[in-house]
Image (tube, rainbow, N blue to C red; front, side, top):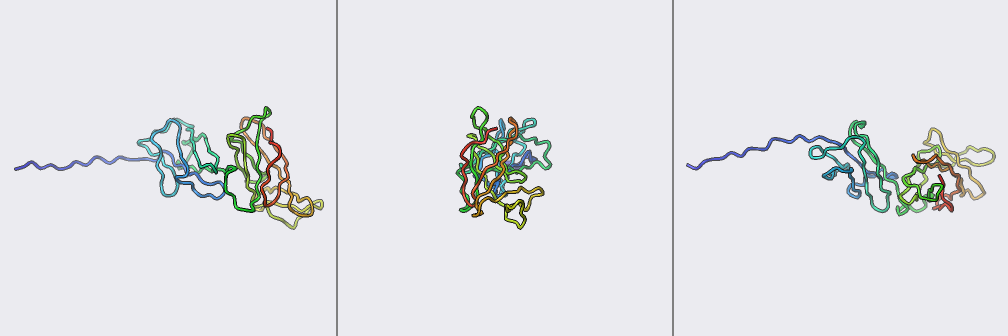
Length: 224
């Protein structure tokens, strides 16, 4: 009589979530899914992508280094790559949404108000990963490795309020709205206060004229 054999099942492997990262378009909130490549320095293997757009680092096989971990997100040319330090132990749950800001190659809707420029230091060198925002609003972007930025301006609407004869425009969703005075009779020219922040430099403000419904390219860099 032939010997009979019963297969022995491998014991189940318990898998835990070490970190979940969801890269999203900063303007639309749309997840980039496989358009982005997510990695952590010195961590292998690469994370897996789930249907909702999160890149999952699972343990095992992944073992994260001690905090902070250096997270890099490589993107298509229309976005600015991000490298950030993440303190995973402070996250509960261990999930992170990372906003990806548009580059100058981004395909903006026609007629959208935009301002484009560069940020430099006192020596004329580009300042990368600086935050550029409109004062007193949450409208912001970041500079790329060449110090370039482009900022889309939304949520600024005309109001009935006036001061010193100038019509005012405000961000209606802001607790501390920015005031944008309308100069001239055509109602198209505006001045905005751009605020630039970077951990290696002092905060800088710059008031610049923009044109509503157009791309305004600053004729001089913002110097930090």
